[in-house]
Length: 581
Image (cartoon, rainbow, N blue to C red; front, top):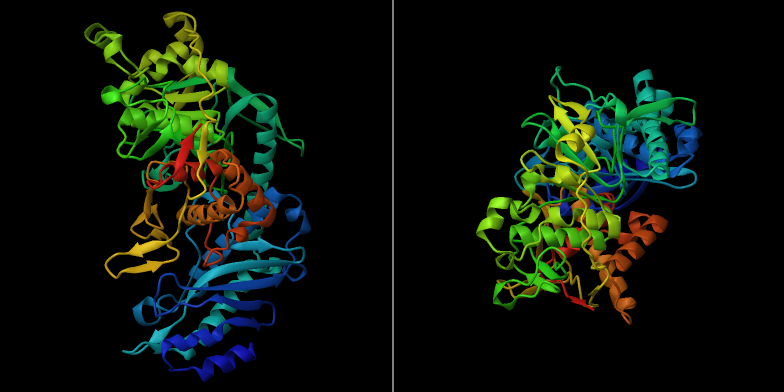
């Protein structure tokens, strides 16, 4: 601590770049502070990266909270949020020139994710955070006096409130238990679902509506109705502590959710697609659990497609375009949706989610009037409606549809749900009485998801600045004003339509996953393998070594995406080199 104070004094009022001398570690009475990366100028983005290291025996967080990987993830998520809350309590922000002199964490969603911001060893916990060091004056010299206030007073208070269990008040201790309980109960629900062939579970009492279409926090409206399962679909899941949790179980197969406009159909679907992640206590969706491989499918006009076999859904197109190995730089709604299905199945998903509002209608159905006007030979699209049962029968692909105007899918559904003013009803029997038994079809569908191979020369991170005639060896950058777009090398990867990306740090992690995949492709390219092979291999390495395996330029700012989002990003790279056997 004294060493840091003396060093700060020695560079007081010096040009800002002299803060590079701070790189290193400094011992405080109860923790160690380390500077990992140093910013180049006042208020720079990205800011400096620092870390706090605490001995677990000093923190006194109960050992029972570290028994499983799920529990550790919950504690890590709790700590980074507690650190963020303590910044708000104790720190004066933006105290210097250009907004410098601030503490921050990475952007946090409502989900508990595997992040590299909090890491556990056998006997320590390490928390990485962002810090913008303070500058003052017209020239932006280093403000050592304010820096020492930040470290000696504010950071000390933040650390005490975040890491030391004895400083937690009763509500904070309760909140930590709730974080861990959510993960433990989710794990038990997931095991039960696997044993009983369920694809989703929505716990009774869940509060599904969100604050807005761009704000994933729970709705503040007092009139929101808590979810209640229809009696016919309610299941009780026994828990290890003797309790049980009740809610609606959705079985494998084809499920349709219908109802009038603004009655909660899409709200239920949004909860289901978000249920692949654990949610923080108080979110309202803590016990909405969806099978991990669920993937939301939508139309995506204008996207790039590379050598995808969409022939199960679209036959050969005019002008001699073959759909058995289809490529496009500007896909239509129907071809993009067909490719999205094939690519999701290729990546390992066997649970696909659809909302008719975001689908290409001509891809979903072909009604009787159109059939009377157009001969079958004039329409290359084979509607999903005509193959949905075959996908389930032959490839065990479960599907959940939200339909408000396309009742055709009710004829194919094993389970039919009605949302009526946010009240969920099981209308399967009523649908069967009125529409007759499930309409089966038996269209043979070949295994279309195992033939694409990645070429070795993929994912080049180099960026050529043609204006300056200069090559930057590596460009991996998320866009501040377009948080669902990634600059990688010469490519701009648009992930706006990939609905299950939860927070911006996952976008940046995808970039470093691409870099790691490039290294593996270069090393092991003697035999070309499928996209799924390489992604599974990378996932295995990250599970063993942690997110540090990706070697980000700024450690502590990544959140791990699912492999399905990584596959989606790869398939949207316009420079992708892929061939089909």
